[in-house]
Length: 139
Image (cartoon, rainbow, N blue to C red):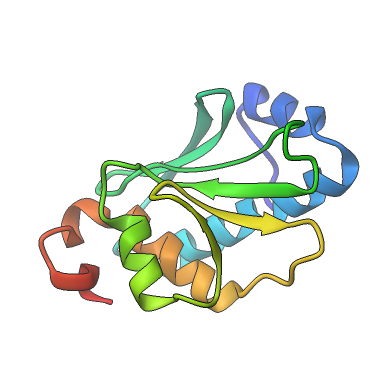
């Protein structure tokens, strides 16, 4: 896995319980893998937004990942709730994920990730501003 260069992000990951840190690091790696595999995405900035690890590409919408003590057996990948992203994901992958309204894909501690579908969702988000005018984001 890639090392975390941003010290604030590294500290945030260290603050998570071990089991959730591993799950969130896997989500992080999927984001970085999708960005490096798709030249249309370009560089991805890793930072904290709303206190959570966040990933943003030049023509994309922010992807955030996080865990909260109020839902201790769940973790999530968050998207801009004012975008068409989660509504599009629900249309394309109605049974692959558990959704939280129009803002997140939520994972249970014991869930197996549908990695191929999730990477597709990540790629759409990291290119959102190029795709938002296309039906179903061109998926």
